[in-house]
Image 1 (cartoon, rainbow, N blue to C red):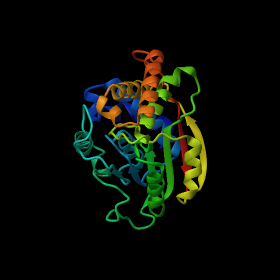
Image 2 (cartoon, rainbow, N blue to C red):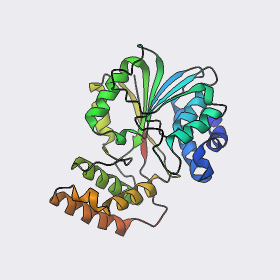
Image 3 (cartoon, rainbow, N blue to C red):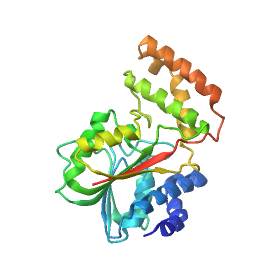
Image 4 (spheres, rainbow, N blue to C red):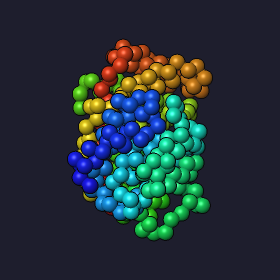
Length: 284
């Protein structure tokens, strides 16, 4: 399926998501972003895909469309079905399961692939996908171990994440929000936000060979229509105003975080903040 075909299906795919009931325009832009990614990966009909960090299934739906009725997507997430708002992971998965893509998808929530009980025969999957989920890992070591664990199971890796290197001044607020959240987590005050371990594209490229993967290529991904900059700025400012989380920080770190949050309030717009660019890496 080519780029144009998937893009053309983005509207119907987005409408099939439970989150579309709350924010149809946002869901459509998120689905179009993922459709462009999957189209660039040339995943053939009939393929088997292991998706790690599937969340509410934004990428899962696009992958299921790409693999067609004879393909299969195993969508895994460590979170429980009750996680997420305003739509939980379980509610979103139930909507997809009840639709035409349902027979192609196997959702597995509360599942950690590092658990020895989770196993697949070598070569089970044509592709393994991680899309905008790697900053959620508790550490780079956990990410490396996960990538090493799935290496025998799949032939190709498709990986995409936000790029810490800004390409314009409009992205600085998103960058600062990400770095503040990463500092709070690194200093030992842990939460359940989307940003726990932010790292650069260069760090990923250094990590992949350690996990047994050989990089085929890397490229930038346009994110102009995405709302994630606004979301992470709001999450960061909420976090910086949470006394319980800040009280767990060493005093020097707490002061730095508070000062950086002041800067973030000064440079961020009320809404419409430009998201960082993203990158895509392919490996085998």
